[in-house]
Length: 289
Image 1 (tube, rainbow, N blue to C red):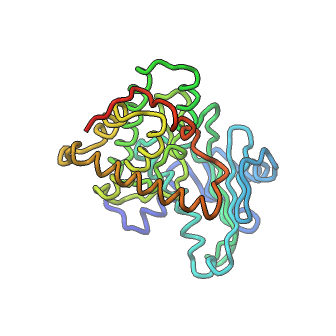
Image 2: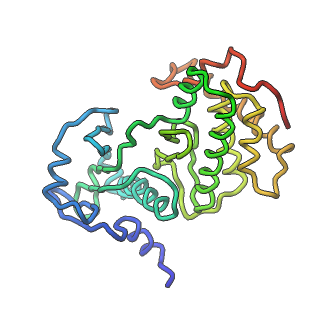
C-alpha cells in the first residue's frame, strides 16, 4: 500500500517502535521503552553544555544529547516552527530506515498548543569517542599515519556517501564537520536540519557535495588521493576528466566567498583543522585529471 504524503510524514514523526506521550505543556514522540517519568527526569538534568545560543542549547547527558530550540512567536503562528522543528527528527528516521548511519533517536518533544510550537527538543545518541572527519584526519596526519591509510579512509567514506545519495536524501552541507567517525572506517552523518529526503540526487546536488568535501580536505590531502575519492562517487554518465575541473573551480570560488565574508565579519569559532596544513607539502603530492 502506498502512503500519502501526510501519512508518510506521520510515520516518520512516530515510526514503529515509538509512541506519543503527553507531557506538561506539550507532547513527546519517544521510543516505546521510555516512559514519561524517565523522559521528564532526563529533560530535567543540566548535563554538560556542548553549545549554547540565544535560540538553542545542546547538552550531553551520558549516552544522550539533548538539543533544545526556542521558536519566535511569529514562526509558531504560521506553522514554520513546527515544520522546521520536526524536519531533522523525521530526516533522522528516514535515513535510519534506509540504512544510513545516523545517531540513534530517543525522543522528540514539542511544547505548545493548538498546533503552535513555542519550543522543541530532540534527544539522540551521543557518538562517544568520535570526531568529525576533519579533526580525525588532522589527528592521524600529526601521528604520522602511513599514506595507505588515507586511501582506505577515503574509499570507505565515499561508500557511505554513495549510500546516502542512494537513499533518496541529500545533505545540503556535506562538509567534513558534519560527518563523524570513531575509527576511520564507519561514518555517521549529523546536522540533519540540512537534509532533504524523498528527492532525487541529481548532478547539481552532487556537484555541491563534492565541492564541500574537496574544500574540507584539499589543504591537507593532494589530488592523488582526492581525485580517486571523487571518482568513486561519480555515476557512469559523468566523466571524471570533465568533472574534476568543475569541482576545483567551484571550490576556489567557494573558498574566496567564505574568506571574503570572514574578512568582514570575522572567522567562525570553529575552523577546519586541516587548513593548518595548507602551507605544508600535501600528502602524496601529484595532480591527476
